[in-house]
Picture 1 (tube, rainbow, N blue to C red):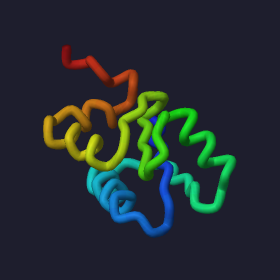
Picture 2 (picture 1 turned 180 degrees about the vertical axis):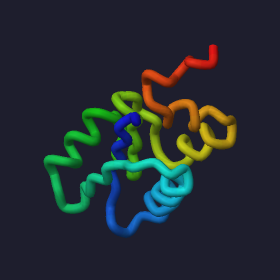
Picture 3 (picture 1 turned 60 degrees about the horizontal axis):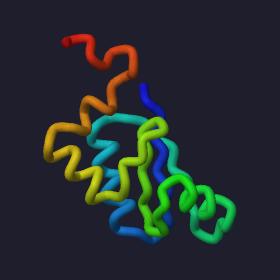
Length: 92
């Protein structure tokens, strides 16, 4: 399975929405709180070039925030990113 990382804060409605979407997809993800953690916030900013949460990564690919994640899902482009790398393109 791909490694999914989501940078969050405790009180963040978009973080909750992203969390629920990923849970609905049945995938595991690592949640990293940047609340009060300057080091993790700096890492998130460096990786995403953004300052808002959530910031979501699938493996090393920056997805963006909840709106970006939901848009990928609506377009049918999220599910292929959630399958193991060695299974991608197996049907092609």
